[in-house]
Image 1 (cartoon, rainbow, N blue to C red):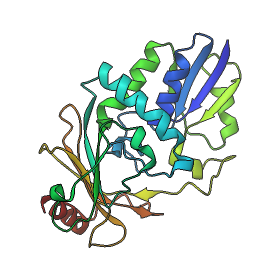
Image 2: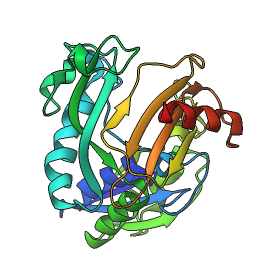
Image 3: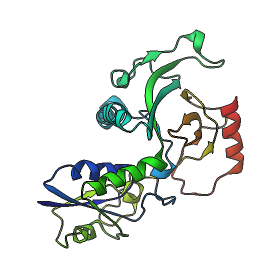
Image 4: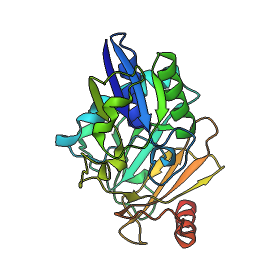
Length: 263
């Protein structure tokens, strides 16, 4: 049996561990500094909206192309209380988007249906995950499959090999540290940078999910509305501030976010 250590307990880490733990030939340990239920600026998954909206180009869209069918066709059907389907609109979007054959019900929005001030738009079915429920669900499924979860703060990726629950060295270490890959010894990935995305969570329900291509409030401010599944409220966004580690909310930005959503 192969001993595997997965480093990181965000969506990527827990999903990786879950898929591996389904194979009886693998013994899986998840090691992470932050766990479901934690809230820290370094732990990005709990803060996610989290809807499916591709941001990559066709050359780099392999992950989205492979991930969406799993989310939409498998998790949606089996875990409807944690995930739900909706519609996502992106104004000024490419009518010939590379993912038009990936998402269901892709269509170009006629000009007669566009809100005032917008030139173009697309619509398609998507998903919006309630991360507060989804992370514990993933962890519970890993445990049900026999995986072990432990909290540890690593200074170097090489340290992970000695943390398998069997007490033996791991045969494989999978790095799913996400944002912390920029700080982890032995990795120190300079291409990984924080993107500060301030949002506002409200109790109101709002459908469909909507995202616009930009705002008049600056190049790093966005407008989107995403209703989370299972009573998780609605996420109003937002900002996209590269390189910004500031965890404190900006009340002026929050006011602009809500104003844009209402308008």
